Each structure stands twice: as structure tokens, then as C-alpha cells.
Image 1 (tube, helix red, strand yellow):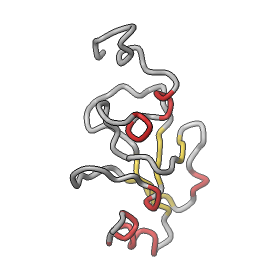
Image 2: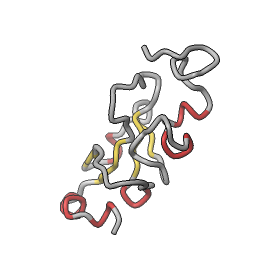
Image 3: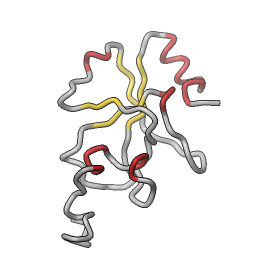
Image 4: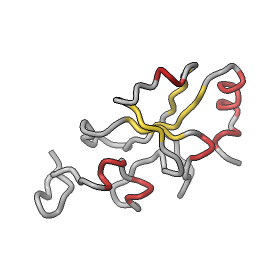
Length: 110
């Protein structure tokens, strides 16, 4: 019925929090050159079997420093190397793959 309709999110928004899904990989993947991407619950792309992901709740959205965070819409919170990059890769990777992932430079994960 949508992420924004879950009891926990309703509780958080009812008491004044702005809640976001955090886009991340399930495993240890180097992303030091990427902003932390957040997706509003009403704009999350959900696909595949049920799965969990991390959330961030803030009282004041201005606390999200734009040099650290990016708000995305219609993206999957679950980052997956083997799925559609437009939905499942960090935004920075859409224009510049990291060297360890780029098949023309390396086949090895650091």
C-alpha cells in the first residue's frame, strides 16, 4: 500500500518528522565520492520481493546539508549493481563509473 502508509512512517510524520529512504547497497561498496541520496517515501520506486532498507528522519529538512545529501525521486532505495542503473545506481555513477566497476579500466573490487 505504499511505504508512506506503514505504521512506523505514519507515527514519525504525525509527530512532525520528515522521513526519507536512504539509498545504499546491502554490502560494502565504496561510495566515498557520492552524495548520500535520500528518497521521500511517496517517491520510492519499489521492485522485486519485499526487502528492508535504511531510513532517515529529521525534524527540520534544512539540516540536510546539500554538500552531503541529495534528494531523489522515483529511484530505488536499494542500490544493486546488476539492475537498471537509472533506478539502482548512485546518481554520480550515471555519468562516471568508479574505476573498480568500469570494465575498460579494471575488473577488481578494491
